[in-house]
Length: 70
Image (cartoon, rainbow, N blue to C red):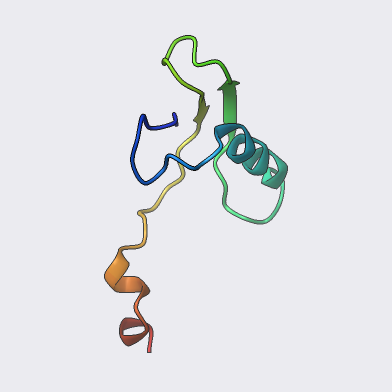
């Protein structure tokens, strides 16, 4: 995952995200394994990290509404 040049994820901190996922490793929460972090963006032009994939699919916005949860 790398920092977008601009857009909705501009404010995120890749190093903090990498650290949080690493801290949750070994917990009972389903989190991807973090593989490496590149703070200076050498190969990708901006800060980035790699992580494994988890099975499943993201929750869609309509599935998050109260109407659909009740």
